[in-house]
Length: 149
Image (cartoon, rainbow, N blue to C red; front, side, top):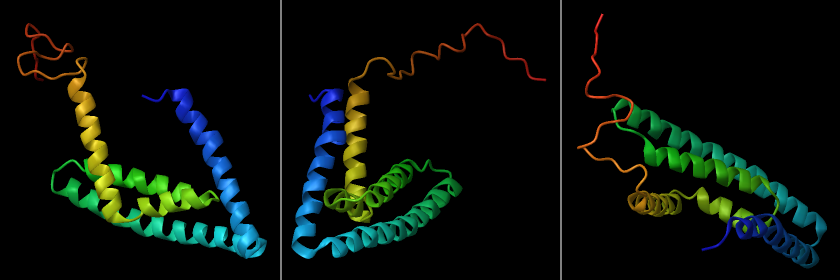
């Protein structure tokens, strides 16, 4: 398992170094101005797509809540859209690919399923918050009286 320090090192040191390298290589191939134009274009296109996808997920959240179901998957997808939009605003080739991938509904739904399965497995292994119908919450004891006014 990768430590938190290793993840942060990857996130803040190695990925930006790779992004800079790729942008320099792209700039040497197509020129500085087209590279800058491409960065601006992906930022504008990404913001537009994130807005469109975000409004779509927002309407799904409202439908789920109106029908009385918790919008858990929709909330996770909404968070992914926000992350995708933010990543698209940062200049870089790898981050743009990742950001656009998060804005594709089929990719987002499959990633959402994998995240929820991973979360369910980790919570199933956890013993601290396991729910049992035999035990009551520690906030209320059986001897507590309920007084309705």
